[in-house]
Image: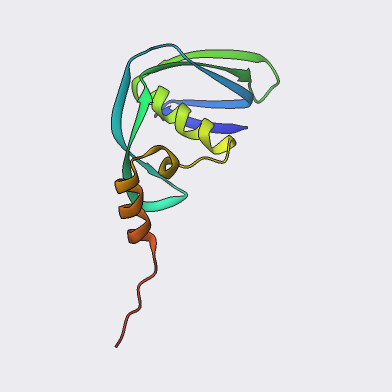
Length: 108
């Protein structure tokens, strides 16, 4: 299950979701994540998806999403498969993100 709000006045809740690309067009943009705060990396994603599942009341729902909403849905769906944005970026961006996350020794 995941919940996301790509628009200020709309919240999506999906139980047992499935996600299918609706576009062959990809776009690369920087992504951040609440699980890895302070780090952004470029991630390539399809620009449109169909998201199906059940809502918080058990009713079947389907959403055709584009742009930022599609990107957010893919990002959250990845978490269900144990994937982070670091798994979808370039090796160079991953190394830079990991270096930023490593604790640094501070001598005083």
